[in-house]
Length: 327
Image 1 (spheres, one colour):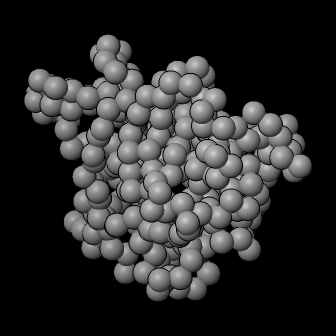
Image 2: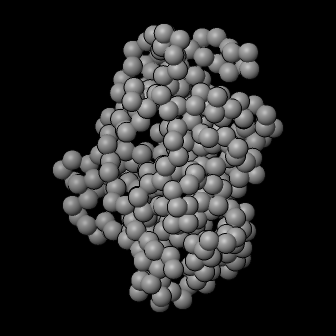
Image 3: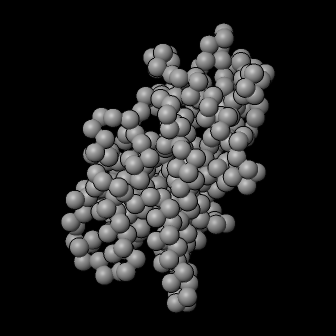
């Protein structure tokens, strides 16, 4: 391992030792590093390496070093920020990043073969769909009330932090955010190599996930404004937990919950081409309603999940993607 002149750490792949594949996607494969239980290695596929921008990754790695100690701690608690460049025969092949902590994993699946997987945002969105189903075993917390608002506030504060520092998350989706309920509700953003600093092209080609596509981008690069649209989807879908949503659905049209009504209204504004509610706007709205619930003395509603089954730490989980159309 050595430092580049800009202070960014670089390591040869051969020095990582034995690697254990955790999961694989279109861009590359993520490996557990057996010699370092706190890190994982993302190796890009050969077919995408020619498109990678090492300078953009270097800028991302450098960025937290400019933050205050408090801000460094915040972003490292809410992301898996790249921290080391990996080379092979002097060519850039991937990077190291923190491993997702165990508190963000849950048992979930059919009773005969329940899986152990990350607790992604899709599970928050779909949380009510398996309640009462005796064929499903799940330790996914059934968040409602103040704990749910705390989680949505935490997610919104994370995006507000990125945007204040001119960072675009880009590919926001139900698979790229994980969450926990204990000890405090918290969201963590994944696929951070898809982040880009405003004014740079990004490490990889910009992309959007199905059902999380900003209709006003028209094929252009993702922006802070497209992040605002997707944050609105994440809050709306997470709050109602309806799974498949349409903006004219019965559940939304008949909503008489003051919190839900304001969330629907702000989400609708986020779908417009003009100025959109910012992440800070979401923080302020959600905190206002949290204070109201707290002052009203309503009980904290959450379901304590059972202890996860003793299974391998990471398995594949494919969640049904929620749909929503804001008009």
